[in-house]
Image (cartoon, rainbow, N blue to C red; front, side, top):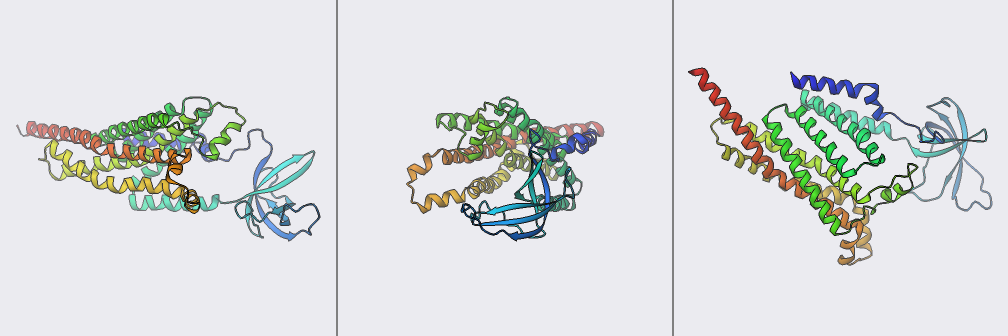
Length: 380
């Protein structure tokens, strides 16, 4: 009954205007310029003029605004093509794009800023949700709910809290606790299996975070290894960030997903083994959990390493192409950061196996003893 109440309350919160505002589009901080959706109607090439060699090609683009106060308005704008495929936005009639609108002394200026991709993202997300519900049934629906809750906490608690000047590490730990507790209780139910998984997951994630903090501090990781971190220096809120704190908060949040998967899998396996054989001892339950955990650990550690490596393939290709020596590569801030992030997450994953197996084995074993005592009393 309590679980149903929790589900209903979360559903109401997430589906309310406050909850849905997580996914709502917002205007810029100062209200100017404005970003709106638009559809390309016509594209014509502009005759080249002297002194404009920066652009390889200039186009006259006629477009229709699809959102906001200017919805339905048709406007012509000049769109430049530089020849750099990484930055150029190639357009043709029928394309949908994002445009930036600026009111410059009563004259509305329009600039094409990006392709409109969110419709495809929504399509893939809808397919993901549909498959979760079809394959997982009611549990799949609960999974969707926990996913929405996670996004809600990140966008409405973690990020605003960091921008407000609170400790990113403390916020990451608090959000991780809430996400772990609520997710596991909703998906696994309010029982000893879930309690064991929660303790195992939180314990291993916190240890992984501490290891990353200590090693990262000794290695003098700056937290400024990415362009995005550098850009935070120039945001309008003028917040003095603890950049190393942001790095370690990211490590904690990044490790949580994989560790939570491992913890819940081990605890569920122990619970299923106990249901099949009621006469197993606590020690035998722990051994069963360890055996399952070892199998998961082997593949999940590779998953973390491959995930981080996959995102760094262009950078690794650059190092390979220029034959950079190993000593230089491994000591670069950006590489050292990713290595410590990967190994800290993997340490949390490995620690989760014995921790969850022991705690869940004890909890579920006690549940078995309690049930046997209750049955004996009923027989008497």
